[in-house]
Length: 269
Image (cartoon, rainbow, N blue to C red; front, side, top):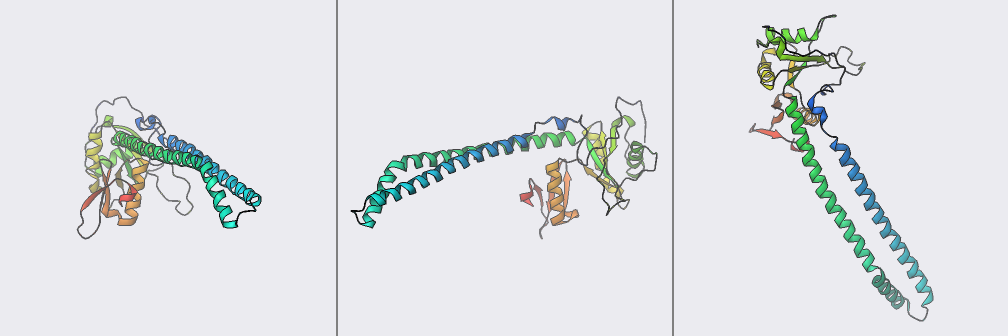
């Protein structure tokens, strides 16, 4: 690998979980829209439950009044008496029921509108986060000798195994994730995140990933949590070779025609 004077930049041995960038990465500055959506949903649901409780109380009150009036109207026949009581109570309580029904309908419509807006905001934030991740790649299966520097390992893989020329200053940050303990797979190797000086450099390295075939090392894009879930579910259902990512977008092939289609959500699988 070629070298030239290094730009400012340090290497971190962070212990972040797989799929998450460091705390200084731009993608982590997005507001927590998911919590806001959950809070809104909870408040609307609570209001709807309160209105339903009012309706139930009105029904109980009507039942009590029906019972009382039946007892007090002995001169009439049972059928006529019940009909008269029902008609009088409907006249009395119908406006209240109409009001509650309108309020419930209005709440449901408002919730649907707000829910759609939240989805659009979440989608836009996911796009922004993914755009910020395009300068990073995930290297899986990278073994590291005791005392060896993980950045040097990645440097050697890129230059020697992938045949890509990347300057030292263009590999700005490298760190290995920390995996939770797994007694069934104690030899599992934690992936390594490599962040480059630009998206173009990362793209150049990613384009040469096929040269690592049969080496036990795999290179993938750094995807958002949402896109990782789509990718994993699609691979579970369609097979690893039929699902891939490109520029942060998830694609799949399935069926006899083997046409390529983009997966926007898990529902598209």
